[in-house]
Image (cartoon, rainbow, N blue to C red; front, side, top):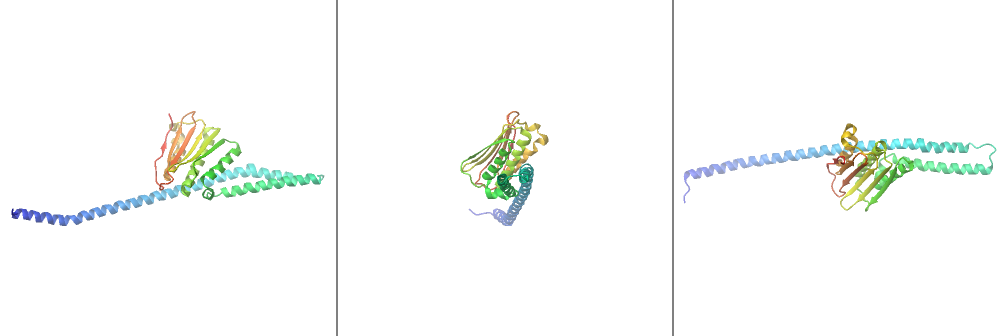
Length: 274
């Protein structure tokens, strides 16, 4: 079958158009790809910048919280012990050698106690101690301090084999713990706080539960901005946060994260239980 002249012309025109348009399509595709790639890089840089800013804010808040604690400890503990030492050493002139020896031994022991307390306080001045000790040990120390004060009773449980979650993640998790603890102490009226750190193969859970008065999210001042802050911070480290509460039922904050995943931005869930 012979091809007509008209068909030949149509084939030539079609081939010419394809030949001319193909590079244009390639250029458009490459341009779109580069734009998407550039946008992705810019979004990634923005997220990283926000994360670093939030991380810095977290470090500053932790140091402020620590300084407040140190101020109370120096006023309520160290100052009182040193005052007692001062009184102890102001011995009457008629004191016997045995009485003097007893007073000196008591003062020596008290000063040794103060030195240890100040050494512990100096270590807590920096958030670096979280990196050195790890999340579990740091929370154990903090829980011990609170129990020692008698303000509230803390029950701490560790499940599974503890493993490092990464410096930045543990820093943010400890700040979330501090914030939840402060909320419980200031607003819940709770007498007991249960804290659990559960380590599984592909999951870590931090749970903080109090037996306080509870609340409805809609009735919180500023819409519960403090608790929303916990959710947002959890998302920064790729964790999910669930805050469960209802009047008369206390409050339970649960932070969940896969330790093996890359640090990503995740969504948290903030609600009141019905």
